Image (cartoon, rainbow, N blue to C red; front, side, top):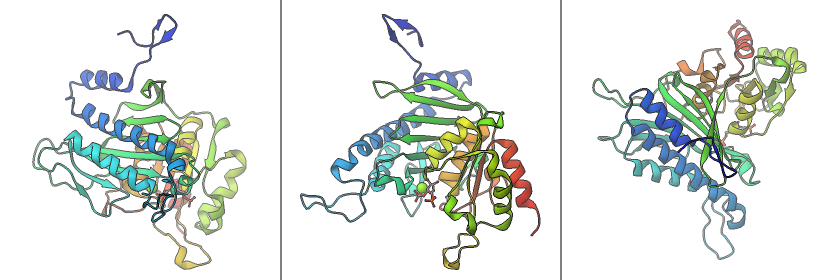
Length: 337
Ligand code: AHM
Ligand code: MG
């Protein structure tokens, strides 16, 4: 079938799966990655349908809630987790998975699997009860194909792909190792179509900063100083859900940050390691950003993609976005004191 052609007024767009098939064949690769991606797309679309009707059914409320029939209502993030694990199991291609919603690493197909999947099935919890944008984030690494596989946790630089769905908006962005970052939109049939290569804009005119401004006095002094010196140059936007905020950063340029909290008036509320999780939040957007020409560092100014996780739920501070801006901030972070 011709893709992107007009037939009797109907526009046919290239689908994500067709794009991926061409990508795999161009590189003489197996179709296993397509099967895995089909599972992830099915999970995201299933979650999207639940989310759209969640307010009606009471699934967007708190855990432990009871609906009008007196039945226990499952929290949306638990539903999203179960949906994702179901599709990953069905794919037969996953050795093990890490999910924000599961305490332990989830063994899936230790003998026959080919990939590791690190995911957050419903990120942006403060938006859930409002039905506002949330994200489904994932990173994929491949098993060692030349020798025994020990199942160690991979650093972002060893991911082969990372992606995010913005739910319920219906956009999907994926970074493919050394092949760039691509965005897709849903068509009338709920299919992801029209591959659009994403490159962070060079021109700072449209750049935006994105961080939780109510936390700013809790940041390290050098971070506060950098913000004070730079905030006047850029617009500011903050949604409170990483996929949505980073979606804007990727399109318009600028920087999303979730710095370490080190100066909270209540020291118990400090988060010196940052809030976001390395494997399925920070490294996912860092990978996507890197493939779009950007950069990402942690509180020490170390590239996020270089950090080898010691624990699957490890946290990290995150500064991600336009390379020049991230590098400028990283220089401040690397200064002593
Ligand atoms: P969650 O995993 O509990 O949903 O938290 C992650 C979210 C991110 O999506 C978002 O960038 C950040 O937390 C917002 O945090 P805050 O409400 O502190 O600004
Ligand atoms: Mg999360």
